[in-house]
Image 1: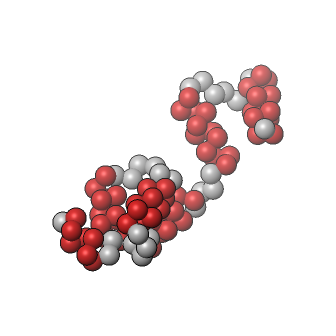
Image 2: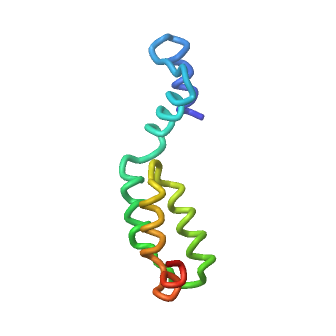
Image 3: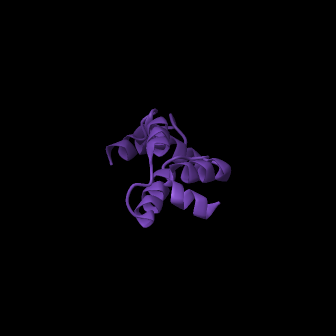
Length: 93
C-alpha cells in the first residue's frame, strides 16, 4: 500500500508515469521481486526430483515453473523429464 501511495503521488506530481499495464507490471516487479529470485527458482527447478508420488512431483514442478518467466516449453520438458525417476522417464519416452 505504501508503494502505491508513493507511486500515485509521484504520478500526480508528474514525476513518474505508468501509462500501460506492462509499465505497471514492470514497476511492481522492480519493487517487490528480488533480482535473484528467478535465479534461485531456476536452481530449485534444477534440483527438483521425483521422490514421492508422480502427482506430488508434477504439482511441485508446475508451481516452481510458474515462478520463472520466459521459460521455453523445450526447457520445461527437458527439466521435467530429467527430474523423473527412471521408471517414469522410460514410460514417458
